[in-house]
Length: 210
Image 1 (cartoon, one colour):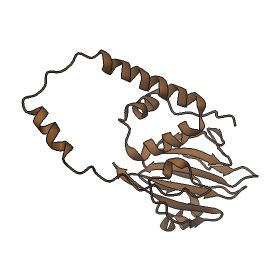
Image 2 (cartoon, rainbow, N blue to C red):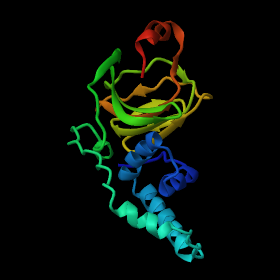
Image 3 (cartoon, rainbow, N blue to C red):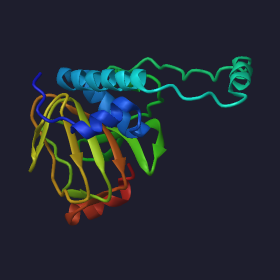
């Protein structure tokens, strides 16, 4: 598997430091799980961050902080999120989340919701498209991050196969075309909405509520 498209270093740094919001972190985690190059970069960022913490001068303890810490030890720990057995077409990063059933949204195209808590209107879902199918020509009202899990698609900005990461914003208009062969399955974090173009897009828009 050759991975060509990756998140930028700023995104990987935010992911490694834990400052990236949960919906987008899930998609980056799916890519990192498939990409040895980005996995090594994240590990390097984490190691560097740990070294900075070790070298930081100790902060003076606040009055009463020890008593507060000891009191918290007696509190019940919050329950860990339940892990679900991932379905065959779901990446392991989705084990902590409920995943809905596939729903039709257009010819050859289905989607399923992933119950990741939204952040600033960003939500997570999976998209499945049949070989040779195409999504209607569309733009975006916000940012869309995609990790390809299976199959491949093409659009004006290139080819995206298993493991590839695609970032689109409101400057991008495209018509992704799924290659022949495997069904294309993607994990997507999307802020805002798809804005379908053309007569087919206007026809399908009422049914597309991703």
